[in-house]
Image (cartoon, rainbow, N blue to C red; front, top):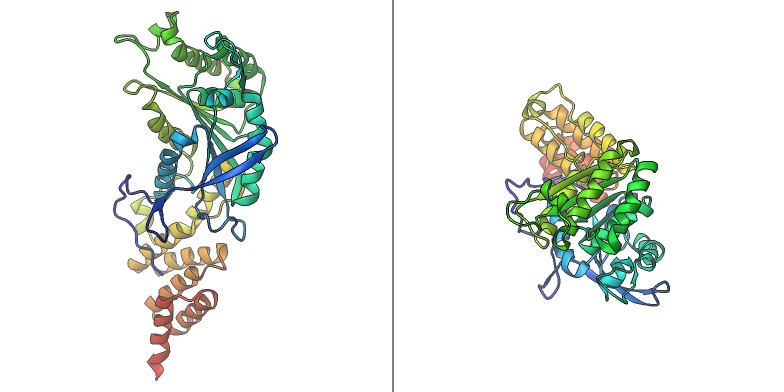
Length: 403
């Protein structure tokens, strides 16, 4: 069954929304978890590519997971970004877990700070909840893979950096956006200086986004000489970035970006998009018109090699995407490059033997080649897996040819 290829995709046409019976649209659903670590019920918002009706999928299909701090304000944005990116082949579909904070300062800071006399953050306890209760809940109820991303903004960014420094094996990628690294006299920056020099971070990725919080005419070099409280957030981030640059042997995959035209609030959305583009910069399948038009270029081989690289980066086997392969196959079929189309459709059948659409596509190829017997065979196989009206009609037409 041919999947129509979109000519253009509008960002704000949110492809993740799902229509309910009452015609409302939702981005996810709420779950409540009883936490022994925190001694209370905690809510999370979850978005899964399978929706709320299917908690697990058959076979080895699964999705990376984003654990998102400040879920109340951050969830819809990240769902929008990731669904858009996955639709255009920039990243895989992902499960998004938006963490709700009854008291975000308690959750996202540890210890004390002179600016908050009498206040004690319980961030260590919160992270214990994430590691020992929230993650096992998500992994046992939704189709996940081992690849995990941690995103935080402001004090959430502080929590992300703290996790990278002290719990680097908890996530694969860390995103800190305008992190409040000034907390407790820049304690995490001081700890980071030593740990970044002496610990190996191979296989880990960090993106840091910095907003413009400076006076007019001040740049990121000049601000480092300032000592006022107004610039301590950006100065603490710049200091950590300097320590990371000095620790080149730790193998941390790192990028930072300064957003001159964004403030503390607006940096969040643009930073999330840039961060995910950086994390998944290996994911997009790059192909040229010369490859598509050349009958001697095996597109299936290019796909196989590309997804081997994705598997290496992700740390588990990732099969070539069925829709992507199918679309390429139909493009070759439309150009009457039958061998190239057949290789692609066969690749899909090998990877997804229980997918009726793969056999329907192969049937269309044989139909175009006027190979009636093999077309009938593949249409019958598709219908043995799933009842598809379009396939059923094509088979009926073929069988009636001899009547």
